[in-house]
Image (cartoon, rainbow, N blue to C red):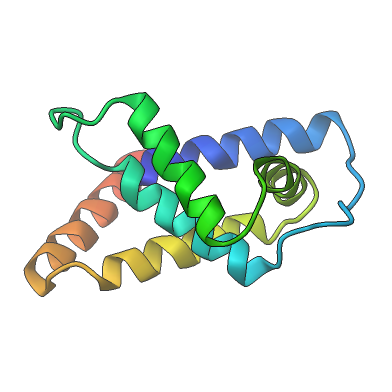
Length: 125
């Protein structure tokens, strides 16, 4: 999850330096966008050892969009807008991470927090 957030933040930084984008007329509301991303991240975290391949994961993402009645091109344009123009995107990802951590059993959550702290300490050094 942290790698996804780091990659996304890096991409956000890169894109924001290179261009501007207009707010799409059909921009997905923040809460809906956050909900969709959270569901997608949960399914993308399925271990590589599972029998699920990339096409099946893409089908799950498409199913999530259909569940929310969001066409893929609307999702793409909203994703691009949030990543390029909206500084709130990092907060959205943090909120997703926090909400997913709340779903972990207590012991697992404590272990996860310890690993996050350790990683942050290593990044500082």
